[in-house]
Image 1 (cartoon, rainbow, N blue to C red):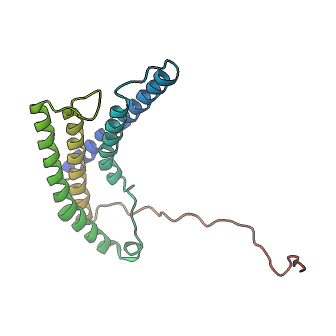
Image 2 (cartoon, rainbow, N blue to C red; image 1 turned 120 degrees about the vertical axis):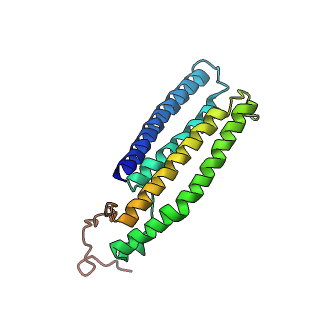
Image 3 (cartoon, helix red, strand yellow; image 1 turned 90 degrees about the horizontal axis):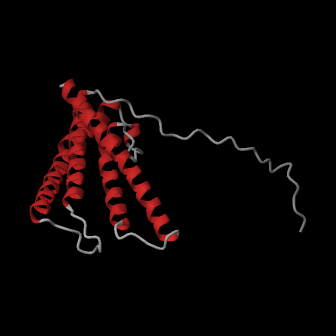
Length: 189
């Protein structure tokens, strides 16, 4: 089982590297668009499409690794006060039995959508550039599938008691100077 969990972690890492590449693509395309628009007066047709596609894909591709690193925002007002084993059981149920099946179902739908877009040659109809949509849909489906696998792996780890304890998220106390009201000058009215 450890080999499967390591494989899932590796897949999440690879998807994360793809997300990092998407950031570079987004930056380069936006820099090119700004230069083309403001230096040469020739805006591109594709800037908006590249921006929303690369932003959407980088977020979904990074989700699995973010879950692996326990970096998602979490409200732990109640769970931080629970025993670790109870917290693991709740996470196991949530990840493995609730979220992984839902995300698996959404991944299947996304994969079917990507296949349909490929078969029919679907393009973005509201864009003057009209890019093919199947590459975008395919990357979204892959990211969702990776998140599904990572949810299952983290759920299994939670049930097996193998999850790392959550890192303390408490901010250090602020070291503010004390204001002594007894010695402060009073305003005379």
